[in-house]
Length: 552
Image 1: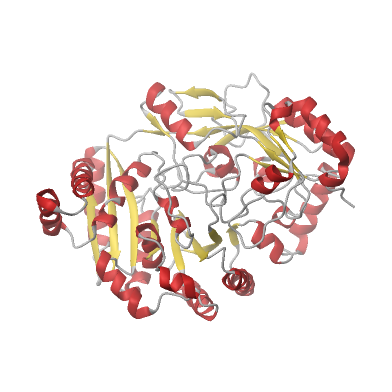
Image 2 (image 1 turned 120 degrees about the horizontal axis):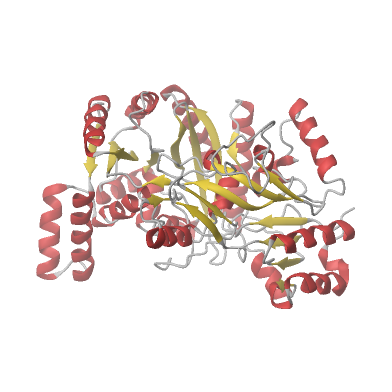
């Protein structure tokens, strides 16, 4: 049986302090409680937290944990809100946070790649590239600028640019095994010049074993970068009625298969967009009630929200972008939709208009002018127009805090403009992420499974279809709940379990998952599960590294 850190006496803490320094080991009750906060309905208090500063320290900690039979759960930075934050599957674990390991070791301008440690944030890499390698951009997510580039890639996260498949653009990893050994992946020694350019190396490709698993701790990785395009145009497709969504999904797939669409298009429903624009209605929050259809329809009219909104980018030379715009315009002539293109000057104009509105607070001569100019261009509310420059920045690899504000939809706190931490601030949020074939029929089937369950548990459905590749979307369901309402918190947990079971019965697999999924029940069995168990037994016979992660 595993020994919890609480029962390991002060000897373990002293040994950790000898490895990483006393100020990098947190074992007080207050510190453990703070670091165990999460956006899920249930938190699991850790036994201690350690912040190693190097791969050698990680190796020493793993050897120590093996000797003392202490479970270790590693996190690059632990900002994966909605999937588990920095929680282990059980209480009393040693939490290993790698954020001090934040070196950008190399950026190769000619071959367009970077070699980084897991503590490097999206904002850090963006600023470094702007200053030192302005011809290159790194894809980023629409979550926190303080998220780990490498950590998100290991979890197979997605962004928006043509390099939006983050794990697909990793090349060359260094991993600390549970034994404390350092493994270099990519079939090459340290002198090999193709370690970060030839993804498969020589012989069996092992990188996938260390993605979404508990076989090792990734401490260094190469990631490919995107050369800055000559021209970038953002497009939005407003799908006014849900009946038009299947045709839009099919058309986007055909554009992707033809190579016209290269970005990872995100298609979000009106409820998810609303969470970016305002707080949940206070009277309904107090009642623990969903937003009724009639009231939601009024909010959609107020903000100019369509039923669904697709956002993507077009990259290339001026001529390539012009040709792709023509093809996209032709393919997306779908009844009940509206397609709009925004280049750099149009986005700058929108930003200027929003700034004018914000400075005037909507009143006086400046407010009147801003409103008059906007009205000639769009019926959308200023709060929605303000998202346009943020999304254009993301398509350029510029991280933003704006989208993360949605995590505060049902929080009693209003989000600040930056330094957001939904777990710290008591937000209630879970993500269920499913892989779905990119057809209108499958999208409809997925919605038909999900929507009635949200209604049964008295919660509104937040949904997004994001293009993973030319043939697959991931269907992201957001469960927003009030952490201070015990009954609603329990309903959210029940809804997650029911969604998990329902989609599993219908054969849809998770694209990624976290604590709520692993706690919901065992994963799929069969030969694959048996093989993974055998690998785990070989690499980690004491079962100390994140036991139960991804059901392994």
